[in-house]
Image (cartoon, one colour):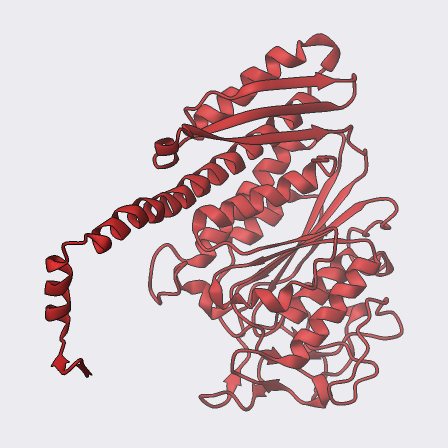
Length: 444
């Protein structure tokens, strides 16, 4: 490039800047650099403050819940609340003493407020030594109703990977999940008043849902391929319940199977159209566990989960609903209560996008790829059934490949979608769910 008859390279331009006695470049750099540094540093200080405030908010939630379980007439709520709050903060590694901490009670509910300050490293250059965050929470008296939870957990082959998706990595996603579920039950035990009855079901899903534990009266006499129902000790697998099936158009229902039994498929059936050829249903997928108030047995079943197969999350969701449905009361060993008589929750985790359908349109099919429109349509309709039944839905999309955007419409206004990317974030998700379930009375 020629400028006034000369050719200028980068080195010549820099030499020109150095030789410029007017100092304009140096002045501009001298002015702009501190501004840029302050902007970047301010963002770092702000992020640090947000993280600190979130930890303090969880501590405040735990504090008011702890206070609400005590005899409020026999304690000094302010003194005891401050002691608990500060103890939890210390346990979380927060060394900044909270200020303006207040705990009040009307004899039944407890409210806590406070300010936490985060030291700045960059903004103190302009005189801002700390950034303050406000935390507040209120616990109101528990509704003495039973709680029923459907645990719908992904046990597909990718749950054998580590949290970053490394095959053969450690710890495995399935093991991290087991720890997180145990943390949820531990938190519920600490949170729930002893008068509240807690029940849970377990619906492990992969290529399908293993229905061997489902009472025979709910299952069709023949499979979707016309095979006779095998003995009760043989694994059989769920297909979509589509009484109005016609291609991708179907009616998702949670109605009683009496008079409209559930169809199934046997392990020997092959699923066509996979990217690598025919895929057989895993013959050893973990069994569905019906609703039970024997929580140690549910914990034990979770501990025994093993990963294998593809991902049919829509089947996991609908069978989670079946285990909670009062219309199935005559089917299950422990009859689910009505939504008026119990608080009902679906807690579902997936680490991959749904890629398998079993009988939509009359065909058994593994679609492969990153999405399955029919599966997600079925899932969305199942979520709508759950919300219409009054169930609260908590979804956990583990990792970037879990298709969080395709799950977001499911939870509605009462539930929540979590997107953890680390083991500690998964623990926080399950612990947070437990707080919301166990104290369905934490108001803000």
